[in-house]
Length: 562
Image (tube, rainbow, N blue to C red; front, side):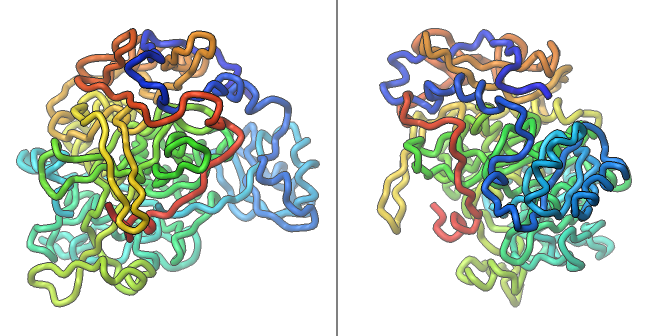
């Protein structure tokens, strides 16, 4: 297996100088970056680090990735070690097995086994949002997502009037399946809210709370239980199901509003391998960045806190903005909880985009965990006898804003590939931001300052009107680049991995995600505004590659808001 740290990197012409414009405490590429990237995968170890300390007498559920789609012989080899096949994960050449931890070293010696990881836990992390990103422009041209299928992999979707066709009364949730039990309803309250941001027609509010694409078809794949928790195995199975149903329901988008900590490179992470399989099957995968932007546990000021699978360079990873309760973008600011890049271990430049995600009003799932626990978030609309809507915040909410936008774009131009969609959205994203913004938590009274750099806002703020007006057709791969620091010069570069992706990478030799690129020297420019601030220590105090961030649920932010 090719190791990320040892691959030949093609360095772009973009140079990010550690000059005066950056201040003395700069955005999080620590001096450890090249060393830890090179060492992260040294040695022949095939067993994930978080399995190393497991009690050898215990029984564990593990995902075993093979060099090929596992055969009956491979399954039998695991059974011979006392294991049992729980689920076939063919889309990533893997299987989910239950077996004794003591059998793992022997299993890792199988030459067909590439990597063994635990079946990890994953958690789920409307007012002005559509107008802010220009969805109303698409609506004026009759675009509403008709014909496009969006797979919502989440906590389920509870039936809601706003998800029905007003002409026929039929539900636009055209397929439902639970990968954890037999119940496809939303017992947690997260998936219904997400689905509404994508697809609500606002029927219960007389159009006051519409979603982004009011006529898309929804594919409900439930993987989170009533506490908002799920596992890698169930999620990978859901992604595989979406791939299998792609042609049946014209599934062009997967919405993934959840995440978990990063434990290994995206090259080995089974969640990342699964979303890559969907991407290569022609499905745009939109993923939440995570809600750990306030985490300063390691002196990193919220940098390198992107969660998996948002760390994968294929997918569109989304951070959260605050709309300031107006339809204009000039007064919008980044949500301080929005996770920032670069990604742990691989140092991929993330997020790719930002979109409205703070205090969004969307569909309520009555009696769900969130509904009962946070009754104050219910919203009663005109004409309804009971609250039909609910307020939540987080990158989980920003993600379906982008998913809905992708649905509008693909209805208008169905021939676009996932890479072309990603490139189009990133190139046309608005790049007008303030230098910095601050917010004080009303409970803790702690003030958080955010700087609008590439690791905070990515290529910019979602701009649907711009994306629809643009006619550029990218011809290469739109993989997010890697940030690499040269400790001898103090300069950082953005690199694309041509040894894997070839020479057809869209960003080519100059990363231009707008009308202007970075400028060499002491001034670093992103679009028309300076985006590098002085928010993160550049030096040895930021630990790279040896620690992983803690996971966070969207509900934590939903309660506090900003």
